[in-house]
Length: 265
Image (tube, rainbow, N blue to C red):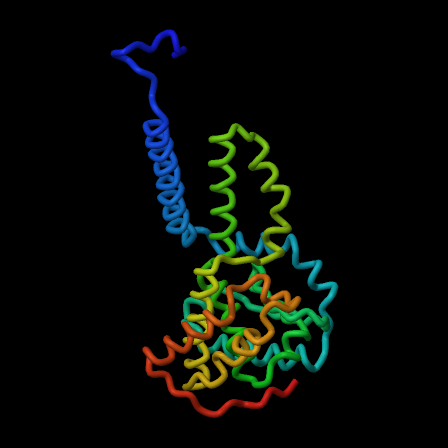
């Protein structure tokens, strides 16, 4: 409708009315994305683990080339196996976990699709007890238990489809597909996913040792290094908040804190 079609009985909309209409549209779009996100989360459980293994097969060769057999690798395998025995039976049946040890100074641990955990030497150098290393490994196992890789990818696809529909960007979905390897390889999770993985790791630590000594040690040490160029700090939420939440969970669940086992690698 052009301006000449407006009259005293049919005045043009004012700025406030336009803002109200825009606000309603934005709210509807956000609500639709939220609802679709919940629907996708509900459907994740129907997707077989083989799908994640197929995603992992795309990027695993890059990590396999850097990994090497060593006594450290053997010890890490034993620790991971010990944690697995404390997992719920259904998770032990659904997953086939393995671990890659990479002798690199990067301070990080990564959970990759296909039940693969990557541990860098730089992280082991920052770890002072077996218990805190088991907490880190338990955290990574939490990402597999919660199917976080598929949830992250599904939400990225959803946002790309919505953006392409609203803005007419037909290449949005194609661009996402082209960057899929990078997205999966980065293994970047939301803060809520990281918090849930921390809680899973704490539960697993208690199930393995009967107490939770060392549960917050690694994160407390990382808190002191916040701001430095550490890979794990760029992909995880602030360490201070993680420590506070873990301490609250330990108190709420009345977990005991016993002796720590020295780390022998």
